[in-house]
Amino acid sequence: MTEAVGNGAEPSAAGRAAPTAAGRSAEFWGYLMWGLAGLAIAVPELASVFRLADWPTISSTIGHLQSQHAWVRLIVVFVIVVLAYYAVPQLTMNPDPAPSTVGGRPVTANGRITTNNAPVQLLGVGYLVLAAVVLIFGVLFAAGARHMDPSTYLGAYVLYGLIALVWVVIPSVLSLVFSRDVPFPTLFRTIGYLERRAHPFAAVLLALLVVLLIHLAFYPWPRVIA
Image (cartoon, rainbow, N blue to C red):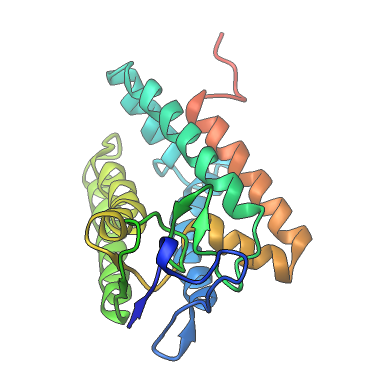
């Protein structure tokens, strides 16, 4: 399946129909895929807040990395600023029909930046299966590493690194360099879908995401170390 993007596509005001995979809409796959990634991140965070388990959270993992290499904090802040720059236009536009440009840049129907005037090929459910297998492997590896050495962060590095790689990095490279798009939309395009259906819930989710990003950038905020 291919889609037109950029100046040779439909005008951005008209938009395009969101792609489907295995008979399911991009909106469905967005909820499913980002829901799975969110669970892998939120469960350890909540377990830590309520002192239910001693599992490396994504914030403590990044905090550990920052304690080993101070320059990591700069990268975290840089990534957050870039995310905000591309997120705001997506959150202010109706995701259906999908706009062909966001912030003046051509994007795929799932919201990823791509090359101008390049037809984009939509990948099938094989990528979704691969992502699920990678996530299961990451969880099992993290659990095994933690069982063998309760003080290690190796498993957390692998788990959260794989999520970033498969959910964000690889889809972005595929769309920008190879004119390929995975079946699920970006996180902020997914939030845009959710806002249309359940605005209060989407607002709360977005607020929690902002708090998490600030927590990552200024870890261990809001806890203050004397």
